[in-house]
Length: 79
Image (cartoon, rainbow, N blue to C red; front, side, top):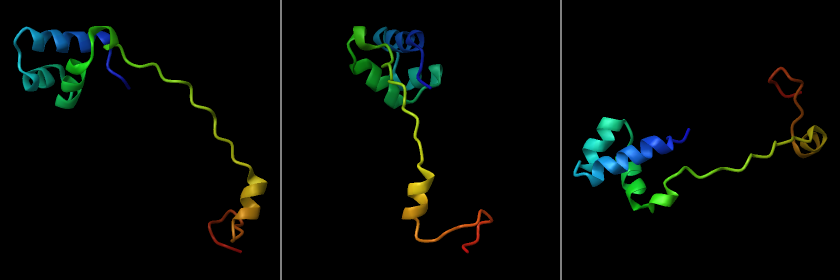
């Protein structure tokens, strides 16, 4: 889960007003790495990146059976 834009802005503002990066990380319960990364970003890019929907993975059972060297009966034992 990504952190909210509001949280990112509050952390950056805290540090820019004189707070330490470590103190910001503890106060806002985020990692120091996040604090450093957010401070490097331009203000207009502080929002979380939108991710594409992941495509569903489909398994072709027939191709799997042909590829698998052992045939299983479903009980966990090879037949």
